[in-house]
Image 1 (cartoon, helix red, strand yellow):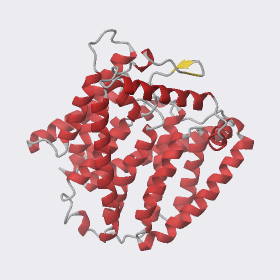
Image 2 (cartoon, rainbow, N blue to C red):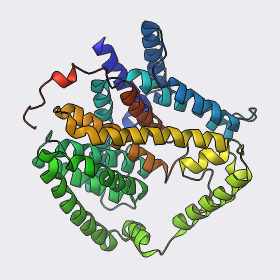
Image 3 (cartoon, helix red, strand yellow):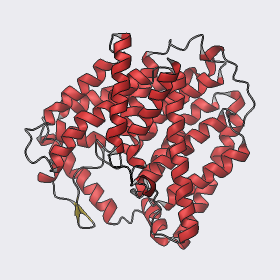
Length: 411
């Protein structure tokens, strides 16, 4: 049974993050969409475990209530190839599965760790590949990996940096591994030219710091990370401003206020979406913002506001937004309480799980506030559900993982 649960966690990670690697050159020979393949396998695992347990997992009602409320944004299908219809179909199939499956498949600490570590490994692989391409091909406008958008590289690499920080702070990895790995991946985030994941990473690290500092054994490592991280990040941005001006300027614009087309278009669609929300309490329908708001970025019409809160409110209505905010708030408050209690456990493994349950959803929520539509942010749905599963099933691993010795030497 343990092997089955761990296999389910593996396939869940492959499903949620298939969009990050399925466009790779070495996978072009695969004749089917890997998101669908891993999605079907994940669904089969869910059905199997439901059949064995014969009851719905704790927290299912929260996900059900949210997706029922978001159904207000559905419209009768017209052109099946249109963006609105494709968005609705994905939302109520793949994205809904991403939000529900972790409640059943990631209920125990060991499955949650496996899921998170696999995502971190994916970020590391993407980062290494991007750096290798940079070394071989030389200067590029923006780094990317697996033929995907640079933002996916930044998101995955940024999450790996976050996981490395947690592992280092709790003494699971040594400085000789942490320093070069995190510095390299942070450079990848910068060279991608994407700011949202960097802001999400910095904000999440700042939010997690108080909980990590509360651990006496981790205090020195935490402050050392902050000191050298701030210095290194500042030096990197200054260097980019001269060596990679096109990328460096993207980061300097945030500090100077000299906005370009990306910043002005993003500000405009946020402002106009807020006005649309006030006028449409029941939403305008999924994928239909561009029918009411015409904002362009580099000549391309923006189809969504690149902020999940604004998107849900504008397209599905106020009730859906309230339920989503309440769900995120409950998970966040429970995560904070879990972080505060991190010093009460003598198990490093349990302390790490508590910090992951708080920081992982916070990071992906930060990413979802700057880019992507509701379906592009499936990692957020999975991480929120993972945190909810951890909080509702906190008694499952009592006497199991807590009894294991965590005083193994760091690798």
